[in-house]
Amino acid sequence: MSEPRNLIIIGSGPAGYTAALYAARANLAPLQFEGAAPNVTGGQLMITTEVENYPGFPKGIEGPELMPLFREQAARFGTEMLAQNVDKVDFAQHPFKVWSDGKEYQAKAIIIATGANAKWLEIPSEKEFMGSGVSACATCDGAFFKGKEVVIVGGGDTAMEEAQFLARFCPKVTLIHRRDTFRASKIMLERVQKHPKIQIITNAVIDEVLGVKGGGVNGVRLKNTLTGATWNYATQGIFVAIGHAPTTGIFKGQIDLNEVGYIEIKKYLTYTSVEGVFAAGDCADHRYRQAVTAAGTGCAAAIDAERWLEANHAG
Image 1 (cartoon, rainbow, N blue to C red):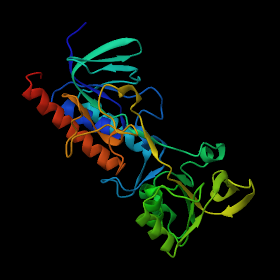
Image 2: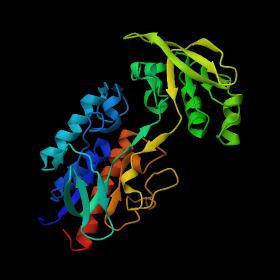
Image 3: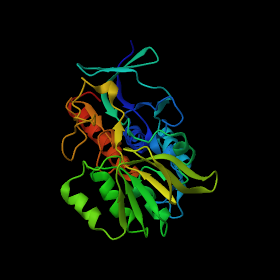
Image 4: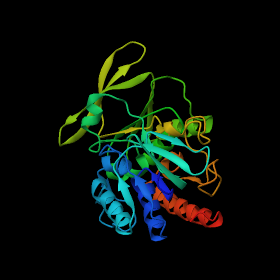
């Protein structure tokens, strides 16, 4: 077994690549596991069309165009990148151990940037219109629907927040929920119920997304969860707000996770419950979930890792 590396980064996307950039420029010679699948390498922006809210691109940029730029910049400074998944980790003792494709790797410090995935409705027509009328982020994509009528699916605080956000741009927002009771807090629900631009349909689910391929969404087929009756409902956009699932399964039992699987970090820091293991991006952030905040925490994680290595004479 060769000498342990200074730093291994698990994951890519804005958080992973920014961590790699800063770590490489600090001469830590990081090894980065980017993930094996094309839609994993680069994170959720790889399935995002126009990105208008990332600083430095005043005319906007396509997600699949932006992430290779992140990768190129991190590679320029010497990050070693492997397009592989990490299958198992052992953070019980130093050096930390990581397994990928049957091979063991060791490192003095670890940065986790495995991200999170939006939960979808899991109907075929949803995938067909993903990025061209179907979105899981009102904050990211709401401005594209200015002047259009949209629907949002969900019953929690996130759905309520995003419905109100969409109402800034859209003349009509319809919130669709499968039950007639809501997980959302009372105050959030009341705000939505009182909003003049928001309509609520309960006991209903989207059975099919309607539209023209290449021409976008023009409606949904709704199904009543009590009677089974279906009907078409006109809309020009669909926002799914039924939650996210952090990609943290392999870390269970290794570091502290919250009740839904997000990595627990110390306030204002990227430190996890294990000294020398750091977390960045959406795997630890269930509040903001933006590319720019992910990149920011990637930077912070690299600086935290660098300082931790220096303080522990492990650099």
